[in-house]
Image 1 (tube, protein in one colour):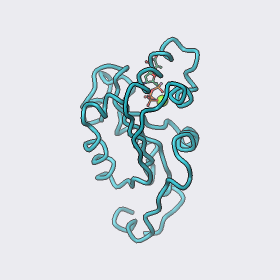
Image 2: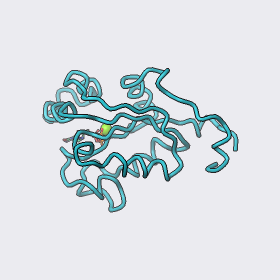
Image 3: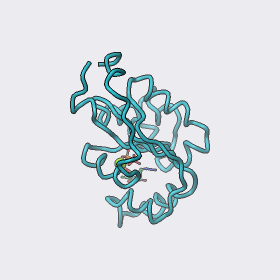
Length: 155
Ligand code: ABT
Ligand code: MG
């Protein structure tokens, strides 16, 4: 019932412009919510291309970088922070492999996507990336706390 450091683990999840345009917001949020994870920050925005480049800084210089940052800045993105035990790794499992045709059925990309350039959702790939990405997209004051009493129903 008590909140350990692991239960307070956080990840950055973003529904990309294709996922938002296709009306997948509610389905995706429902999956994380039903799993037992808590939504602690959320906003919708159209990122600038420059900001998209900051988000994907690790890919700068690679041949797909231009197309990737054009895509992320092409429409509304739903940016979120989700909290809970194992949320970084398990969140990536729920999202599925990078290429939707290689993602298992039952994963978000497996259920909804076909092409890697339209793969619907982003999730931090490590606790380190999560920290960086949460810091890029949100300020500390954006993150809410649910209090202790809710945790006993999941942990
Ligand atoms: P993200 O959650 O978007 O970061 O995807 P994921 O972590 O699953 O995959 P990575 B390797 O981080 O790819 C980021 C985006 O770049 C695209 N990409 C990647 C290509 O188009 N070609 C490539 O060869 C690689 C390595 C796929 C990812 N997303 N989109 N959109
Ligand atoms: Mg990635």
